[in-house]
Every structure is written in C-alpha cells, then in structure tokens.
Length: 276
Length: 296
Image (cartoon, rainbow over all chains, first blue to last red; front, side):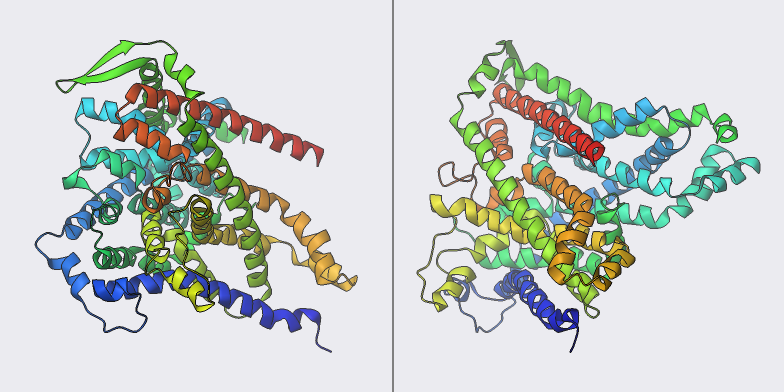
C-alpha cells in the first residue's frame, strides 16, 4: 500500500489549483475587461470581440494623463528607493556595529516599530500643514521624502538583519589592514550585503510605487502617481469602466516584471526577520 | 570583541547614524509634536493663512461621543481580527500543502505572491468591478447556481463581509509566504522521528508541526494585524466607508475629518488618540510576548 502522504498529494494539488484559480481569475478578468467595449462590459459578456479602444484611450488620447502619472510614479519610487538604501545601509550598519549604545539602538528600533504601526494617514495629517508651510506639497521631493519616512522602518529593520550576518572577523581583518570606516562600508559591507540590499531596494520600490494614502493627499495634478490616477477613474460621475480596467491592467506590469525577474529577492525581503 | 571595540570610530558612528536620526526627527517626532499642538487648537484658514485659536481639550472630550469614530474603531477591530484570523488559517493550510509536494512549488509560489505586489488601490478597482451588481463576475457566478444577484458593496449586511473577503484575497498570500518559509526552516529529523514512531498526519500536525510553527504563526499574525489596522486604500475605492458607516474604518475617519471636512484641529486630536492607543497596544503585545517566552 502507498504511504498516506503519497496518496494525499493529488488532493494537495487539487486544493492548490483551486486556490490558484481564485487568485488568478480577478487579474484575468480585469485584463479581459480592458479589451472590452463599455457595452460589452456592462452586459457582462464572457465571449467578446477584443478591442484596443480602451488601451488606446488610456495611452494615447489627448485627455489622458497616464503617461505623466507613470513618469511621476517612476521619479518618486526611484528617488525614495535610492534615499532609503543610503539611509538604511548606513543606519543598519551603525546599529549593528560601530559600538552604538544599546539604549540608542533600542530607542531607534522601538520608535521604528511604533512608527511602522501608525496608519500612514495620521502621518500625512501631521506632515500636511508643515509641507504647506514649506511649500513641499505637490513636489516630487516632498512625496519622495514622505515615502522614505514611511518605508524607512522596514528598510532599517531589514538592513540591520543583513549586516548582522556579515562575520565580524572580516571587518577586523580589514581594520587591521588599515581600512578606514567609509572605505570599509563601501568595499566590505556593501558587497557582502548586496543581495539583502537588492531585496530592500526592490521592496521599497514596489511599496513606493503602490503607495496611495500619502500620495493622494500630498500631490496635485502635476505630481499625481498611478494609484491616485486609478482612484480618480473610479470616482467620476460616469465611471469609464473600460478605461479603468485598461489602466489597472497596465499598472500590473511592474509587479509582473518584479515577480518574474526578482522573485528571489522579494521572498528574501518579505520573510527576513519573520523566521529565525 | 574587546580589541574590536577599541577601534570603534566615534566620528563615523555619528555620521552613519545622522541620516536615520534626521529622518526620524524631521518626519515623525517633529510632526507628531506639531499634531499635538494642533489638537488643542481650532484651526481656520483666513486668506490662505492658518489661524490658530486655543480650545484646550474640548476636541478630546468630543472624541468619545463621535459615533462615526466609534463605528470606525469597531469596524477596524472586526476587519482586522476576523480577516487576519482567516488569512493565517488559510495561509497555513496553503503553506503546509505546498511544503508537502515535490513538483510545482515555485509555480504555486509565483501565483500566490502576485496579489502582494499589486497596488492596494488596484485591488480595490478590480474588486469594485468584480462585485458590481449589474455586470460583476461574482454575481454572474452565483447566478449560474440560481442565486439572485447581491449588491455586495451597497447593502449594510454585506458591505463589511465583502471588504473582509477582498482583504483575505489580497493578503492570504503574504501569510502563505511567511508560513512556507517557516515550514521550510523546520528540522526534518523531528518530523521523520514522529513518522517513524507511527504518528499519523493529524497527530504530526497537532503535536509536531503546530507547536514548532507557533513562533512563526505568532509573527505572521502580528505582522498582518499591524498592516490590517492601517487599511485605507481598498476601503477608499470599494465603499468609501459606506453604506452609512457600515465599512467606516479608523484611517478613513481621520482622512475624512482632516482632508475633506478640513477640521484640522479635531482631526489632529483623533490622530493623536490613535497614536496613543497604538503605542499602548504595542507595549501590551510586547509584554505579553515576553511573558509568553518566559513561561515557555
């Protein structure tokens, strides 16, 4: 007789396939909806003649701002990712090595956790009046800075974890050879934590790209990011369902690209610290 | 270690820590203090200039009677606890199943990760269409079995369960991912020993897997609970807190008070209260965790 484990494997697959269908169907449906005409969509047709009209409208029409929104998202996500990688690598290294007092480390990491638990909307409420005063609202810098602040706790946490894995002996050897601290960080630490840094960067980029609550309130027309644009579509008096679906389908592209080319790093970033 | 400590570079420690401390100071501590100051003032805009007038703690006194805020707190609690409990349970089953199969692991993982990477607002848009009364796929699907279409997001009874359902769809994959990493890090020999001793699947689950997975389960639950309490994007698109206050959540209440009603003083008081209770809850959870570890 087959062992029990072997016999149930087909049931595991059945269970996983059913769940996979549940996960995939909404995505397939929204992509299909992007290729439908408004009428076909509203009638809930399953079989339809695909049309590119919605995509054309979103990408090339005179009134569309999708390209501008994409550009804005790219600028903000790239800037905040670079900023976070810089701050978190230095910060993570200082927290783990360099003999920073334990009290300060606990204060920093503790505050990072509290800060991470707070709904972003309370932070926006706190930033908004200051931003207005300083003229930072509706600027790339203002939004990128806000994204750095929102995602720094996670990045700091990750980088501290990755730096901890670097053997102290390597640093000692470099020190004995007369390596100065900045040189040590750049030539020893950064290369050794590179995979972790990549994981942090990819996650930061994705989270910044996806972020909505902060972007909604700190941007206006010129700096609105893709999520803000998607929300706009859904809220007009007459919802253009086809264009909304096409925009949604297009904004899936970065997630798919990261999933195909950077999955290893995404998994590493999301699971670090949870499993010890 | 001692010799290494002696080489510590105080100057560079300060330089390396400066960016982190500056971001924390400028973007969290300073704004929080500003928020506290605003919460005891009424703020009006005159010719584009903010005019503050001190009102003491009247905003805080009013919080306790704000029915929308109370509805928001209640719904957030239900949303987070019910949603996360189901997500962890489902994620556990999925991770267990994936850890037991030889082929197709990476494929399943790839599919399951997708919802985590997609903007929350996009999830809202997709499900707004999926749950549409007239042409949504969900009503089409239940129609096949002879059920009448349901106005998922527009009726009081269905709105909150629907929103929780969307959150389960969105975040079960995250639980799955953490728990799968947990399963993969379990020592194989203990499981083999249990099997050699004749433990069936159920006994192995009950006496080996669940106890060994408990720390990961707890972390997953906490991680998700924290993000779940912050929910905003999906609610913003799906229901806007409605119908009535059926899906009002705390982030949305603050957003509305602060940004659409322009009641900055009162909104600040609300934010400060939320900050306070979250810090309190955080300390409580950490203490409970510590006691749990000491007892174990």
